[in-house]
Amino acid sequence: MNCVASGSLKFWGKIAAGASALALVVALSGTALADPIPKGWTADHMKPIGFSADGGRYGAFKMALNHAANGKWYLYMGHSFNQGWSILDVTDATNPRYVKFIPFDGPKDWITAQVTIDKNIMITSLDRRSPSDGPDVLIWDITDPENPKQISQWGEGKLGAHRNSYPGGQYAYLATSYPGFTGNIMVILDVSDPAHPKEVGKWWQPGQKEGEPKRDGPVAFHGPVNVSPDGKMASLPYTPDVINLDISDPTQPKLIGRLHITEPFASVGIQSVHTVLPIWDRKLLFVSSEALQESCKDNGLNFAGFIDNSDPAKPRLISVFPTPRPAKGLPYTDFCDKGGRFGPHNTNQEIHNPAVQQTGNLMYISWFNAGLRTFDISDARLPTEVGWFLPPERPGLPAQSGAHASPVNWSEEVAVDSRGNIYLNEDKWGTFIVRYTGKEPVTPKPAKK
Image (cartoon, rainbow, N blue to C red):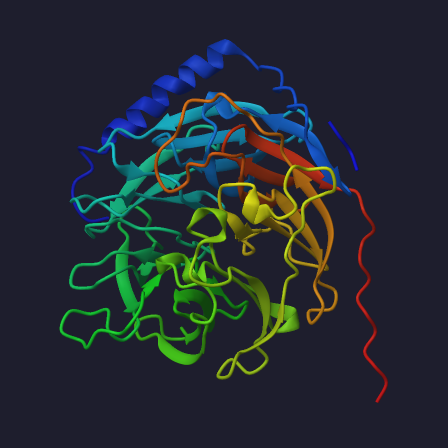
């Protein structure tokens, strides 16, 4: 253990103007040294190698990596507690450079936490805490990776969009509110001309459309969509199910199969089925929920597991990840007693992106108050924890508000670049950059028949 585009751009043009002004400030200020790694962390088979305080805007959220044409590596981040987006230069992961913050000049109860990119296009979400008019997504040109330029917007849902995916090419896949529907639905957006995006198709669960018989329990789409390498199938977390869709005709997505998840697992709204991540070459789906109540008071178990997706019409659950345990010597013997939320939140996404490490025999999962957990998944039926990293507590900070505020430190988002650097966003510190130091698991040989 180591110690211690529909509508006008007039209103939203302020965003781009603010970005240009900030670019000048950053250019004049020169390159700053990296922030020191906070002391007091604990770990097993993991070690921090770099850190950024994100310009004092701790609580950065979703992340997207970019190995840019200029040869540099960048990390783009949304925010939970600030309105806007941050850019880190992580070319040298041991010495990350905070490039800038792009402010969002809009209603104060809007959230700018979500971001997805491919090559020179970035799509960011505008999520809402209360219904209001405005676009759902903003589309940016990041040809100049340090100076994104907003080029269009799309949508008119009252609650905005949540976790979207742009796997490159012609289509982006949105988890968005939509007129005439309850809860987020999936919308397929043609972005071949990013200055003029247009809807081409959509899919929803029965009961979401106005006039359809309502279903019991929460029904909504969290996102993101992951698209198969041949572009014909999508797998996605769509509460209360894991869904496989035929998207060979994007104007008419069709259901292939589903696996009902809630109940018996926790039923906590849109987060009930939070993440579905395919491992395409192994015909597996990783699935997880998101804890909502603190101290494990949700109405069921929050879990991570594997689904055998070899028959997409009949996906079946084959394993559940072991529950993380606190290290010895802590004042609690169960993370439920620590305070804050306990359960999986996210794993390495954006797998369409060549800058992102593809899932091999290790899986990294942010686990809220249990930090970052590392699992050996060489045998999908027996996932085994092989490492963890727990950031130190940071008492005395001003209280935050909203769904992602916590009385204790917690780890929300993780991304891994193709060089093996692990980026962990922690809501009271900033962005830790971590490396796994344990043994690489070996894929078991198939049993002889």
